[in-house]
Length: 192
Image (tube, rainbow, N blue to C red):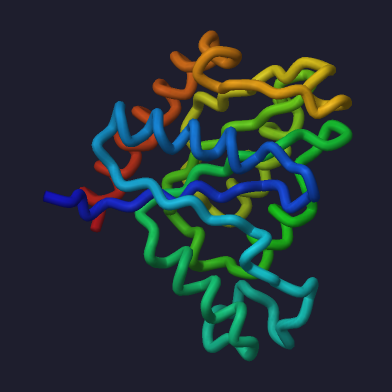
């Protein structure tokens, strides 16, 4: 029987040559194996959301003027929780993630969320910033925010990597974050 609870894994990079899809699929695999929840990967490259093209501020809510905003709203409303899987760029998170969040407001409210970051320094600074923004739209972010350290060879030279082998030390923190997310989802269901 299929679990009715769905977690969206939002890929935080749209760069050419990105490694985000491989890392996101690995996180989804861990979640499927450890939580029993459904995980759907959302590639922001497939969701063109032009900057500031809604005539009203998102906090006013629906109806949205733009079809792409309405579709994005429905996608986020359909999820029971979200996981942002994002690289750290220059100590922050990518603009595409901020834009995806800022397109909506009420859809994020009370949504359980987790942050998995990666980069040459693990991504802790980007996770901190993303946690602040998620808090501003009232997401319920879990305490554990895994930061995957990438080698310089992977970042600068495109060296191959295998998450199961190369990121093994990060597995416990990812499992912990996803377990916390599942607990947040149960608490949210109890409030409904």
